[in-house]
Structure formats: C-alpha cells, structure tokens
Amino acid sequence: MKSDSTKNFMLLFMLALFCIGTSVPSRGQQTPAYKITLPDAIHKALRANLNVQLAESRTDESEGTRQRAMSAALLPRISAQTYANVQNRSLEALGISAPGLPFPSVVGPFSNYDARIYGQQNVLDLTAYRSFRASRSAVEAGKLDERDARDLIVRVTAALYLNAQTAASRAEAAQSRVNDSNTLLKLATDKHDAGTATGVDVLRAEVQLANEQQSLLVAQNDLKQAFLTLARNMGISPGTNFELAEPLQYRALTQPQLDVLLSEALQSRADYLSLAKQRETLLEQQRANHARYFPKVSLNGNIGELGRSIGGMTTTGIIQGQVDFTVFDRDRDGEAGQIASRIKRVDAQIADLQRSVEQDLRQALLNLDSAAQQVSVAGQGQQLARRELVLAQDRFQAGTANNVEVVTAQDELARADENYIIAVTRHVDAKCALARALGDTEKNMQQLVGN
Image (tube, rainbow, N blue to C red; front, side, top):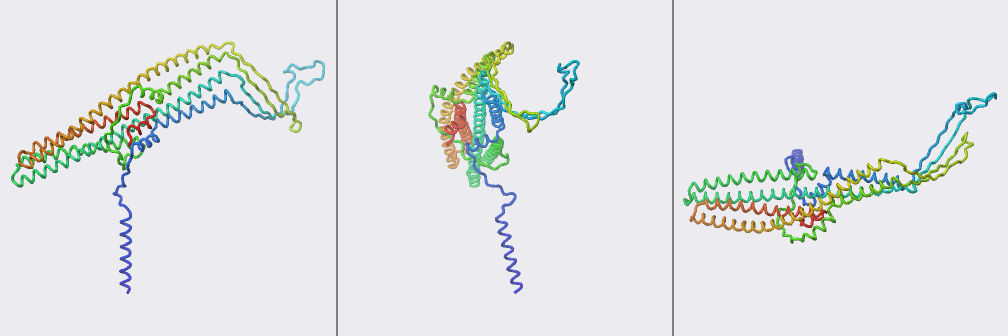
C-alpha cells in the first residue's frame, strides 16, 4: 500500500512538471511577430520622432508669448502690498527749522501701517495691441510648422516602409529562384542517374543553386537592415519582432489634373501657409512700429488702509488717468528697417515655395505616369520570362536540350522580377511624393497609398 501511494505521488509529480514545462515557453522561443500596417508605422513614428516633439515645444512657447502679449495689451494688472515700519525723521535735513525756538531737529520714532491694492489698465495702447495680434499670428505659424514637421515624418516613414516592402519582395523572389534551382538540380540529377544527362548538367545546376542561395542571403540581410531602420524610425526597439501587414503591390491610380492639384496644395501645404502667417505676423509688427508715436492712455489707481496704528487705519486711495507721448525715438526707424527687410525676405520665400510646390507636383505626376507604364511593361516581361522558363524546363526534361537554356531562362526571370519590383516601388514612391506635395500628408497618404 505504501509503495502504491508513493508511485501515485511520483506520477502526479511528473505530470505536474510536464504541464509546467509545456505551458511555460523556453527562453530561446521567440514571441509571435505582430503585423504593422503603414498607418500604424506612421502613428508610432509621429509619437516618437524628436523633430515633432521639438516643434510641439516651440508651439507651446509661442502660445506663452501670446498670453504675455495679451496680458500687456488687454488685461488689467492688479497687485497688493502691505508694510509696517517704525522710523524717525530729520526735520533739519528736510529744511524744516525754527531758529531761536526749542524746535527738535529729529522727530520720532513713530510707526506707519499701510495695506493697499494697486491696479493698472491700458485704455489705448496700439503698440501693445498690434504686438498681441502679431503674437497670435506667430502661434498659428508655429502650429503650421509643427504640422509641416509631422508631414515630413509621414513622408520619411512611408519611404522606409516602402523600402522594407521592396526588400521583402526581393527576398521572396530570391527564395522562389532558389526553389526553381532546387527543382532544376533534382531534375538534372535524376536524368544523370538515368543516363540521359551529363555530369556537366548536374554541375551547372549546382552552380546555379549556389548563386541563387547567395542572392537569397543578401536579400534576407537587406530585409533585416530595412526592418532595423524602420523600427528605429518608429521609436521601438530594433530587436522587436514584427512583420509588414501590407506587401508590395501595384494599385493603379487615375492621373489627376495639375491645375486642380496646385490650387489644393497651396491651400493645404503647411510650409506655405506658415510663411503666409509669418508675413502676417511681420505686418502686425510693422503696424506696432508705426503706433510707437501714438499716445498711450491708461488708468492707474490704488485703495487701501493707512494709519499710525493698526486700530486707527483709515481708507485712502487714488485713481488717475495717464497719457504718454513719445517725443523722440530714434530706435523706431531702425526697427522699421528690420521689419521691412524681413517682409521682403518672406515674400521671396513665398514666391520660391510656390514654384517649388508646382515643381513637386509636376515631378510626382511625371513619375507616377512613367512608373505606371514601367509596371505594365515589366509585368509583360515577367510573364514572358516565366513562359520561357517553363519551355526551357520542358525541353530539358524531354532531352531535346541541355540545361543551359534553363539556367539562362532563370537569369532572365530574375531580371524580369527585379524590373517589376523596381517599377512597382517607383509607382508607390511617386504616390507618396504626390501625397507630400499636396500637403496634409497623413490623410493623402492613406488615400493614395493605403488599402
């Protein structure tokens, strides 16, 4: 009985160890790779990119500047002050004396208590008001700069994602060529064993397989390098196990009209709109400069309790209007010259950017049209190369030719596959460039490139 119970205990113990061993993954076991779409990659990159974070901080800084300018131009300033002192005074030093009379030269000590609230409100200050409007335009320009930084990151991320897709397609094509070479080697070996092929045919097939395996290793390493770069851009660990959810594929796109796109781009491009807001900011600064000779009207006042003792304090106060005039201010002319030169510079930048936007659109449309034609031609060449390979394999299997034709056909198919991959990559890249040229890149990228 004791032996049976010991055996049952050992069986249960071994069963528990087996369950634990099967439920806990080994250290060498990799976690399943999760699939990343292009929108996922863009979202991660926007959250992690340093340039976007810096642009956001600059926007916050300009918002603080706007609040300070609004406070100076429109909002009252209120402060409070209280004090208590004990002092004595020299009447002689103040010019108070009574020669020949017993008049003290120093009076005191005596105490003084004061608790007071001060207020100041600008009624009319065009310089401060224009400066406030300039700061408001600067905030809007900063937000547009932030959006432009985001658009640039979207474009870069899309390019890196496309690079990974291209590398994956090349690795897939290389693996397919290795499979074809294995098939050729098996066929050559079988025919050699049957006495219908020479040893040269087998050796030639082995050399072809070695070459294709070498190409596969290079393609696989390029794919890993592309994944490392993409992971770094997304702000995740380069060792993260992930896969691309969207393979490289061709999606036709109707060629849009340039005139419509140019008008849309000028209304959406964040960099162009930012320059326009910067110009608006400078114009407000110019108006503020003109207003420096205008009078400034303000109200000042205070109210509080004043007395010799805390129990004997009485309410006192004052309210006054104040008008300030600038009689001579040589600095105004220098500031006016600075602002005028900045406006001239921004105008030149706006004109140059208009030409640049049109150039970007024209290049994107030209590349889009050319790449679409290349895809069509490369697709036909790919189909012909596959037919050639099938016919060469049939001829070799039938014994009417050696496997030189098969090896040549495999090389032609490899070149056709590469041409097709390059053509599709160029077409997708042209759509990415068009999305960037149009502005609002994240939205247009989803429409033009996404599923």
